[in-house]
Image (tube, rainbow, N blue to C red; front, side):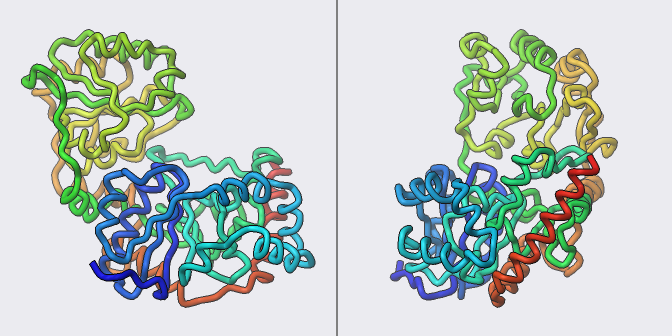
Length: 429
C-alpha cells in the first residue's frame, strides 16, 4: 500500500451512531470505488472502529478513520453546548469574534491536516456534534438521513417545545443540502419552511439491492450455539418501546415464544431495551434462547428461517432477501407499515396469530417474486430518474456540491428566515 495523499479533496462523514454506519457506509463505498480523486474521512464519535463495515472501508487506501479526542470532548462541553457560543454564532456582528475564538482556543487539527471539501452529518445533528468550523469556512455542509421509517405516517417533532427549537434550529444546522429518502419526507421538510432548492430526494442506499449484494461479499458468517439444528430458526428484531409498542403484549409474546419447542430463538435487542421492558435475561437464556446485539443483523437474517419484527427498519433487508417476515402491526396503534398490503410480510393482529404462523411456517402462502420486490422498493425507496443506481445518484449529488463555496452571511440570513417560519408554525399548534 502506497503512502496516503492528504492534499486531495476530502469528504468528511460523521459516524455518530450505529445508524450512521448503517446508512452512510454505502455512500462512502461509492465515493471510494468510483471517484479516485477524492479522499474520505470517517470521523467517529461513538466507537464504531470494529464494525465489520468500517473494517471493510479500511481496506481502501483513500479511506481515513479518526476517533474523537479529549480536545473534542472539551470543546463540546465548554463551547458548543454553551449559551455564549450560541449567542456569538447567532448574530452576524459577532461572527469574527467567534471565528477568532475557534481558531486560537480550540485546535482545528482536521482542517489543518486534510483538504476538506464537504462535511456530511446525519439527520441534521450538526448543532449538537459539530466538531468542525465548516460553517465559517464556506465549506458545503450536507444533512443525510440517519434512519429509515417503516411507518407511513412520519412525524417530525421539531418546534414542539422551545428546547426543540433551540436544539434543531441553531446556526450550526444551516445546511446547504438536506437529503431525504422519500417524497413524503420532502413534504415534511417543506411544511417546516425549508427551501425546496436545498432539499433532494436521495432514496435509501442501505436498502437497495445493489448494496445488499455488495455487502454480502464481506459479511461475516454466523454460526449459532444451538445444540439442535433441525428446528425453525426464528429471529426477533426488538426495538424500544419509544416506537409505540405495548409492553404487556410484548412480554407475553416473548414468554410464549420461549415455550415453543420447535424453534431456535434469537432476540436481536440491546440490553437496555430488555431492562426497560423488565424482562429477566436469565429466564431467556435458561430457555435455550439467545440474546444477540453484537452479531451484524444482516448475518442473523441470513441464518434465519423467519423474522419477527417490532419497530426496526432492518426488516426491510429481510424482505429484500425474501425471508418470511412477521410484522407486529398490533403493537403500534394508529400506525401502518410501509409494506402493508403488498404481500411481502405477514401482518398480525394478536400474539396468538404470531404463534400460529410460526407453528405452521411450512404451509405459508407468502410468495415474493421480482415484481413484488420492485413494487416494494418503489414505495420504501425514493425514485431516482437519472437512470443510475441509488448509490451512484447520491455520490454524484455530493461530488457536485464539493465544487461550490457558500457565503456564511447568506446562510445566516436563510437560517433566520427559517427560524421565523418555524416559530409561526409553533404558534399555530
